[in-house]
Amino acid sequence: MTTTLITGANKGLGHETARRLIAAGHTVWLGARSIERGTAAAAELGARFVQLDVTDDASVAAAVTTVEAGGGLDVLVNNAGIEVRSPGGDIIGAAELTADVLREVFETNVFGLVRVTHAFLPLLEKSAAPVVVNVSSGLASLARAGDGYPGVAYPTSKTAVNMLTVQFAKAFPRMRINAVEPGYTATDLNRHQGMQSVEQGAEIIVRMARLGPDGPTGGYFDQAGRLPW
Image (spheres, rainbow, N blue to C red):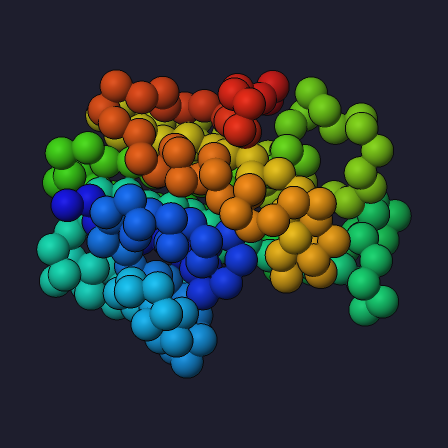
């Protein structure tokens, strides 16, 4: 039985990924900051709930203890992420970007990912087939950065996620560690402006979460294949 932890999984892509992996036979830990919302989502899906705030050391440490007591971990899906917009809902471009905005986004999208990954590495190393999936974005691609999207903080954070993916994959060659681009999916993060459903967006996350030991590692993928860095 494969045991999987998904951060930020009480809604959106994380919730759909949990649903799909449970259907595929995984035991899923649904991580969420809110005990109320997380418990309800886990009960709906038939998942296990663990309170997990990726920005809080104590919360992450407690989650490790809970997951370890539950039998260990095989797959980690770093899904939790935020985007910060102006009070009017506008994308914050370079002219309006402040260090505070960048710091807020990085706290969840980058530092939170590192905090969780580092904390769960000892459990993953005990797995026969450990997998880490980092939910990135097509906006992280430097090769495509001239395509017109004006936002700075969110794409920059996901570019950092891509570098972290490469470096962790080199450091832990027995693990399958990859970054994925779900596509422009309608979720709370983008105020449901995305052009595809969570069912479509979760496809690549689920696929990479189910990799075997002979699967790729250190890559950056969408549904069609590898993406340019």
